[in-house]
Image (tube, rainbow, N blue to C red; front, side, top):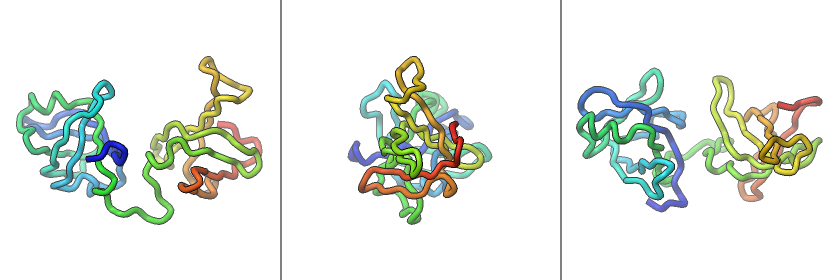
Amino acid sequence: MREEHLLTIGKVTGVHGLKGNLKVWSFAESVDTFGPGRQIRLKSEQEEKGKVYTILTASARKKGVLISLKHVNTVELAEQLIGKEILISKDQLPEIEEDAWYWQDLYGLTVIDTRLGKLGTIERIFPTNANDMLVVVDKKAPNQDAKGESEMLIPMHEHFVESVDLAAKVVTTTLPDGYCS
C-alpha cells in the first residue's frame, strides 16, 4: 500500500458485539467502498504508518457501516482501534463518475471566483445533509482571524462550483453578489 495513494474513507467510532466488529463513520457514498477482501490501513494522528488489515465483511447501518477485519476477533482488539482513521489505496476504489472527486484530490487546490478572483485554497471538506462544504482558507485576507487567515465556506453544488480542473489545480466558482459565508 503506497502512502501517497491512500485516501481516508472513514473513522472507527465504536465496537459492536463481542466478536470484534467495528462501527465506522463512513466518508464514502457507498458501503461497497468497504468491500470484503479490500486492504485498509488504520492509523491515528500520532502514528506515522498505522497497520494494514483485510476487510472480511461490511454492511450498511443507520449511522455508518459495520465491518469485521481479519485477525480482529475480540472486543478487546476492536476497542484498540476506536478513533483510528481508515485509509485505502486509491487503486482499490471503484471508478467514479465524471463530475465527482475524492476529497483528497481537492485539498490544496486554488479556488478562483469568476467575479472576485482568487479566494484561497481548499483546506478541509465536511459533509452536510445537503452538500459537501469546501473550507477555503486565504492566508492574506483583510478580515483575518488570530492565526492570520480568513475562512470561507462554499457548498460543493453546481450553483456555486463551476468547474474543477485537477490538472491545473484550480476550482472555479461563481458566487452570488454579497456571498460571504
